Every structure is written in structure tokens, then in C-alpha cells.
Image 1 (tube, rainbow, N blue to C red):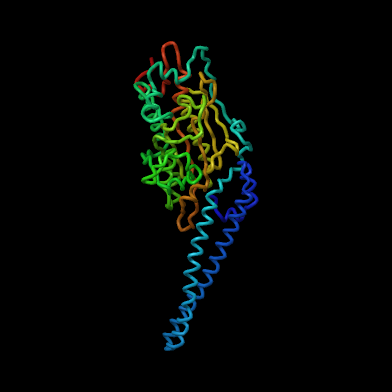
Image 2: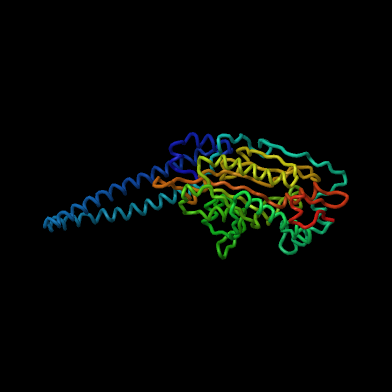
Length: 423
């Protein structure tokens, strides 16, 4: 959530920068400023009446001390109307604050000034490419056929038990999943991230804190009876650990990682682009999260980007890094890098990671602040990244490494799988 003071002081800049996300925010920003003026006017009246009451209370005390009981009683009686007015103004201020908040949460985060303009993924900027594209024979199989051939993943059985988008991993397919999860967690720990095992159900406050609510409510699975949501990513519970806290500056950066299953309804997804592991309703992912000092968050973002790139290099996968254009960015992000690996049999790029800086957008919602000594607390910056999401990694590993001997396992994860080939 944007800070109201920032919107007030940088109105034109907010509107201009949100236009990079292809959002016409003039009307909403105008409504927010009007509501803010109304709220501040009520607060000014309330402060004035409180000041008069406090002054009168002091005078009443002085009169009693001076033995002027009648004058004190008369003045005390005249303050009754002020107390009624205070009660009324406090109620109005509470309503005005909530109405303003309801509008503020509808305003997306403003993009960083380096974010390229654009409307679709085709407008994203390729900033780095690594590795040669695999040269596979014409007989090369896509991962869903490889999964069936080697009995690794059963998509139909998942449909029977739950529905489309909930595959069942079997044998070496399940072993590969576990190997990748452990490999990613070990690498994150080596990089200084503290491993967290969070809940996979969250309450509304947690969804609100990181920006999933109210923006993506329809994309999350909702447990109605308990009013809880299945997490779309480990980012949500891990970042919310620090909701309503003040962190001492010397403890920064705070670096956490965690593995969880993730759940997304993916409403409206269909067609060949979502076949197999390309788009699932339940999938495994290791997430990295940082709480950072505002002056160091973009340095941290580049460090996280390089870290994810290092994982992909270790997995021997060709990949590219894209800086997302305004139209392809999320509601809460200020700047996002996407990592895409090349799927040899499908002959297309598949997104496997997003690494984002949210600046103060999430911390303002969560009331997450940092403090140095006796200085006034300030909002922290939050960042997160997929390190990594498994489905499309598995898809590319299967497709790109198919040989006459079977599917070759990258050397780095052989100690985790216990086998060099799937055959």
C-alpha cells in the first residue's frame, strides 16, 4: 500500500508512474486525496476540541485548588457538550479512516523508474541469456509423454482423485521432486537464508499484508468454514512473520527461505500452453524472502537475481532473465525479474522464477518497520523470489536431457536422487 503522505506530496508522479503499468489512476488518486482531506479535517476538529477540554480540565483543577468550587463546577458542567462532540468526532474519524483505507488498498504499487513501458509479456526486456539451446532429434518427446513412458507422473490419476492440475508423482518422479526441494533448500541455507517451515493456510490479515487480498482473492482457494486461504506461495506466511513488528536496523538483512506446496486456482487457464506441468493448481516451490534497509534493497534484488541464475547454471539449463514491463508486473511489485528456462521438446521459454522488490508497499500494509537507536521507526523494504518453482524445472530437465540411455540427471543433483539416469 502506498503511503498517503507520499501520494499527497507526489501526486503527479504517482499518476505518471502508474501509467507505466497501464493504469489510469487519476480518478482513484483524486478520490483518495479528497478522502484524506476529509479525514484530516475531522482530525483537526477533534484535536481542537480535545485541546479545549484539556485546557478546561487544567483550569478546573486550578479553581478547585484555589477554593473556587462554584466556578469550577460551572466550568465542569460546560465541558459536557465537548465530551459529546469528542465521542461523535472519534466515531467520524474511525469511519473516515476505514473509507480511506478501502480506497488505498485498490491502488497498485508504483513501478521503479527503470521499469520498461509495455502492455504484454512480449514487451518485457531481455537483460541476460545463458547457455546453448538443446539440439534434440525430431523424435524428442514433451515432458508429459516422457512422464508416461517412464512412469514418473500420472496426470489422469490426479484428475480422478482431485481434478485437473493436481498430478501424482511416482517412483523416480517423486524422488526427483524430493531431490530438487532438498537441493534448493541446502543451497539457500548455504547462501545465508534461514529455513522456515510455515503454515500453508493463512488468515485474511496475512493475505492483506502481502497484497494478495483484495487483489487476488478469486485466485486463491478459500476454506469458507474457517475463513482461511491456501497459500499461493511461501512468500505470504514467511513475510507475515514480521507483520506488526519493529526490527532493529543492525539485524538487517533478514533472510528466510522455505519450501511449501503452493495452491492457485488459475481460473481461465486452458489449452496447449497449460498441458502437463506447464500450469498446475498445486505445485512445489522453494521461496527466498528478504527484509531489507531501503537504501540496500535494490542491491539485494540484484544479489537475489544472481543467486537464482546460479541455481539454473548448476542445473545445466539454458535460461534468460527478463525485466518485466509495466503491463506484465504484479499489483504489489516495484520491479520484477523473471527467469525463463528453455523447454527443448516444446521449443519455448517457460517461466520458473520471479524475483521482486516491493519497496515499502507490503511493509506499509503489514506495519513492518525498522529502527536505529532512538531514531523514529521507518518502513522496511521487502523482497522475495522463487528459488525455484519445480514444475517447469522438472519439465525442462526431462525434455532437455532425454537420451538413448534414458533421461540424464544433472551432476549437481545426483547425490540427492541417488541415480544418474531415469530409464
